[in-house]
Image 1: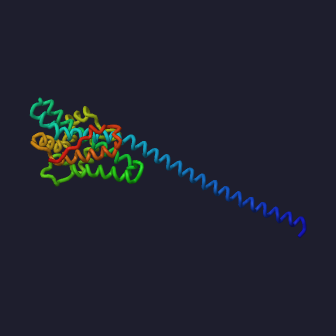
Image 2: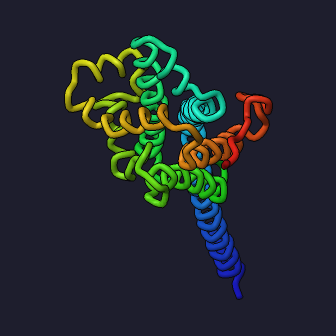
Image 3: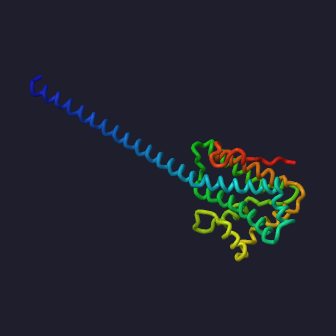
Length: 246
C-alpha cells in the first residue's frame, strides 16, 4: 500500500473514531442533562409537597386538638352540663356556639387539605396512608349510625358541606369564631346547616352520662394528634389524656 493510501486510511479511521466518540459523548451528555432535570423536578415537587404539608399540618393539628379538648371537657368536666344549669343565657350561647365552631373548624381544615393535595405526601406512602386512615376513622365515628341515637352525628357528605361552609369561596383559611357567630346570626341558610348539630349539643348537655360517640371521637382525634406530633413538640404528653368508655 502506498504511503498516501495508508495516511488516508489512518486519517479516515481517526475521523470515524472521533465522530463515534463525539456522538457517544453527546448522547451521554444528553442523558445526564435529562437525569439532572428529572432530579431537580422531583426535588422541587417534593419540596413543594413538604411545604404544603407544613402549611396544612399545623392548622389541622391545632383544630384536632381544640376539638378533642372540647370533647374531653364535655365528658370529664361536664362542660355543657355546667353551663346549661348554672350559666346565664350568654354562657349557654357560648357553650353551644364554641362547640359548633371547633367541630366546624376541624372539618374545614380537613376540606382544605383535601383541596390542596390529591395524594397526601408526608414523606412516604405509608405515612400518607396512615393519615388517610386517621381522617377516615374520625369521619366514620361522626357518620356512624351504630350508636343508640343520632346525637352529634354528621353524615359524610354533610361533613364536607360544613367544612366548605366555614372556608367560603376563594379562602385559604377557616372562619374565626367571631365571624362564625356572625354568620349564624345573619345567614339563615348557613345556620340551617348547623341546626341538627346544635340539637345534638343540647342533647349532650342534658345527658347524665358520656355518649359513646363523643368518647370514640376524642380517642380517634388523639390518635391523629399523636401521629402528626409524635415527639410532642406542639402538645406535651400531659395534655394528651384520653377518655375511657364507661
